[in-house]
Length: 286
Image 1 (tube, rainbow, N blue to C red):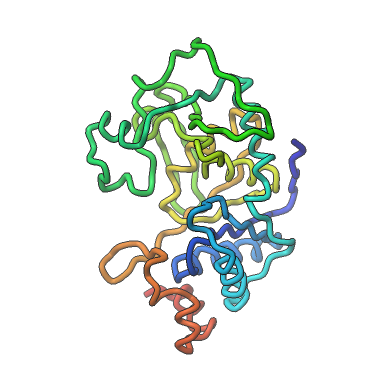
Image 2: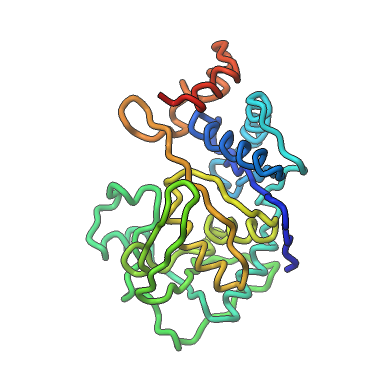
């Protein structure tokens, strides 16, 4: 796979079309645009549309309209992850050839019960629970072959993380971040039994292949960065820099989500709120 060397700053906006964009998305994307502009760089738009159950074409149209309404632009045609699955399969085969992945038949419920957490334990809703080492096959166990490139994958595959490795990176917003494998996160999904790559694999491949030099996203994805750094290292790729922006919270102190329809850009626009008013709020959060 030929990688984009990207000597110049290249950032990206990466919305997922599972609902309307809200103020939290808008602020993160606005920060990304500001950082690209200040570096005299380029900004790409990536459509993270791998969730077959929730992604809808009308949301793809809406997110582009809402971003343009806010004054954000991108320099190349939009890239859709659903059109890049073949590329992700090639990278999965590389990980398989290096024996860095293994098949997994355990369910999320199995993992939660093994770690002593209730089925919908707080803190696990948006992240994988730590995969128990007891569930992992021995390193020298026979490794099943992957299906041919044009055949579906019907089993989960996980990346085998090194044991007790401390990973450190310096985030350009949140500062020094540290995590230990096996304690803070475990063997993680890279391919799902519904024949789609995980967020971790697809995002890592895209950042490398598209030549992204800085990833701007929400602080809730910091733990994902540790997993992705392991993939960058395993594949021999240079990782981008990271800027994890603080999350916008609602009046109850919870982070904004797509269920907050009243704070969707489309709703605010219909109420007569202007892009300038929204951006002013981002510039003066107090």
